[in-house]
Image (cartoon, rainbow, N blue to C red; front, side, top):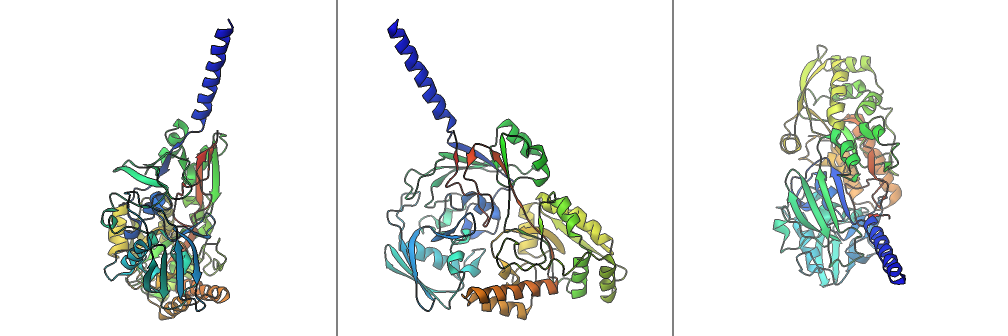
Length: 492
């Protein structure tokens, strides 16, 4: 009898241990709205690339933390010369790429030289414009010399576009990404999902998750059913209009945070009649931001009057520059010789903020005499037609890159905006490291963009996250376009 009691007790203990082990699960399915066009962060502008790969598969010299802070990554420390032009990085040793090749200073030199080369396809080539030379001091030390001091250099090196890649695999990263991060690429089922698995040879703190699948769910109406069924455990960027369906369910955590996503009505500044300041200003006066925010972001977006996140310490509130004023908009159109109105097109990419916001904006502009034809486009079409070929009149998009006000100074950028005064401010900003002076210059830049009504500034995209209540470590805010899984784990 005692023997049977012993066996029974052992079985109970075994079952309890098994239950405990099962509770602390190590797999995760994350829902994302958009499929990346490819998987190389150094060769594309789509935010969806970084949302899968940043900090998970690829790493940079530095990285951006959950509150927008600059943290060391592949570099364990750095020193800066007195003149602010020479950065000497001491690199971690014993680091390997996922294909088994060693990481060292030569990979840093290769990556930075490749990103700034004349034939570079890096979408943020301007991040590297201040670099003069990159020198390998020894395998664990690299020296970067700048043409001039640049206060944002360490931050710039933390962008997804600045991750370090190996010469052996750089050309094939679009389909088979190979980095140094805590996760390695396993598979990509086109149109369905991208799967990462834990890297057993990671140089740093190992990930808690063994497997993470990024499930592509383009239809926002499918988010809630996917959560309720358990098929997907987290939507870091959830549909704002669906929050009410889950916010009182104790099985889920609803987290409202901030992003770097300036949501704007982009305007082709060189295409008549939008090349006239009065027309662009008329658009700004015609926009009723509150109605747009209520309809396109469930009232959760924060209004903006220029290209800067309200969460930034350098933000200037210019939302009062163009109060909603239909009569003023009509008056400006009359000054521009367009008192009888005109027709134009509005190309809308897939996100709900664009499709829903587009309907509202088209109605508001119609009230002042602008007859817009709405043209829905897929992301690939938007990137080709609008972003690359500048074949558009108006469009709506959230620019989620951090601290990216300089995009308005780029001569080949899709806004087709050209203002030497603005360019001068951005150029001065690039060689200024003093924080007070930088704040002053950023204020000037914001005011110029508002005065020129370069685009219709709408709202800062909220980060609405919904995930299983037992899941820990996902970011509340989105200071950079990322779903960083390095500290994500399940509680028991």
